[in-house]
Length: 348
Ligand SMILES: [Mg+2]
Image (cartoon, rainbow, N blue to C red; front, side, top):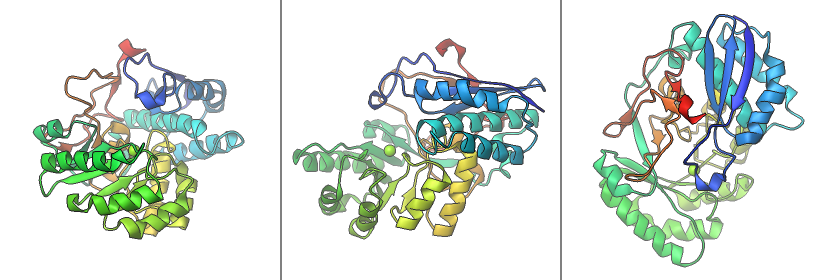
């Protein structure tokens, strides 16, 4: 089939993560074909990425063949190179992610296969999920045995707040559960070193994003300091080129590419190749959403998918209809064609 149109839109969200401001959350990318099949992808970069798709990528796509996984890889390489002068990382690759995922969705629908079958077939069955957010007792009630809470460092009092949060999380998950901490680049080497001591009794599984993504050497030095706690990160890195630098620096124990930001499933597969060579486990950021979930199901990603249940009684935007939900701490993609979801047009 041939691609006839490509477009992107920024949904009318009612609930956007506060750190992403108003106009920088996820975009919807749609690819149309002459076979009557349309594919939908989810990208990052907000309104800026919408402009990249509509004013640049669209003109590159019309008339391109889309009949195989190899065609998707060729399109990825073409768009990456065409956007390279202003791209390589950030908004342009977040936009490319949405395009890439829309291509996988369209090909799956055309072949009447779920994306995980395009990737060689599911190899995991039900995938263990971990709940990210701030309501650990509720996540425990929902049946999760793994959780991650956010912790932002501002001053000395936050040593105590980390211990308090870890106490609650460990109690909610039980002795055998997994507890992780996402510091969103707010700790540094000194704080991470002290936290490693203070949090020993809680057997934390990983510390995430303790430094900025540019501080690769600092994170490499923290790995033996924090061990056996893993130094995790990667949601702010892009493509296999970026991950090669992480590998070269030996910066992280566990990689977390966001499949809707890092360049889509095509980049995810290439990052997995780099990870395999480096012997590093991969657990995609927000991997419980269908875009990462199909990759986890069919690859050698860890058997661990991140879901964001939010807080009890909080409002959320259900942009994609048909997304599987975690039940009793486990989640799996459906066998519907493509990613198996429909766009909720009420949010456009
Ligand atoms: Mg994170």
